[in-house]
Image (cartoon, rainbow, N blue to C red; front, side, top):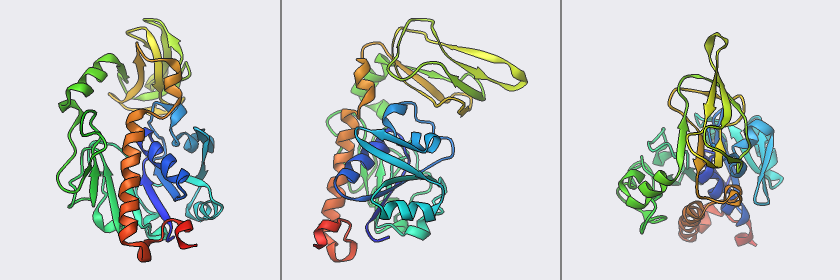
Length: 281
């Protein structure tokens, strides 16, 4: 599909990128795993994997069950997501642009041969080797910088990022099991309040309690399988509930850089790419 941009991932950064590109007139297909693990569920398109469709800031993303259905939806002008963590659909769609926004802090198989333009989001990629370029995601002066060589910085190396991480509190799963979510995103909680339960082998149920009071920024989807150490919820003692319901400033910055890369690349490859339909009229 000549006018297609493919995005690996459906979490917060991937959603912001897809949201901006779709609003700018691009055809966008997102690829996710069977059980997405994004916790800020009100602002991620990966929720469509569970619910069939989801809307973030007036843009709706629809789940396709296979490549054939995805192709039909894309032709109808829809923003589409499907389960394909292994990139099996890559050979079917042959996108001009591939964006790896899984944000796993390591490369899960993306390489430059997968598309004419490949973009890596955050740490784990070497610009010019693994992908065409990398977008810096560490907060601070270089947030959103387009790197044509080298790597993005780990967030733990940035003082501002460390301060933000200290301000919020992540809750990780103590063992493998299935999560029973107790509260919606943006819920105001008290210290030691039960926000969910973990169902483990043998029929045992563990209560998930909050170590601090604050706003529940996000929590994994109900009945989601979890592994030991996986982040299952995040509490922020200082943010406003309304901030949990919209795309963040960091995500908007990163998505703007992705758009800049694509538009700039298309300008020099316009006869080959033709990503934007309105440029051909």
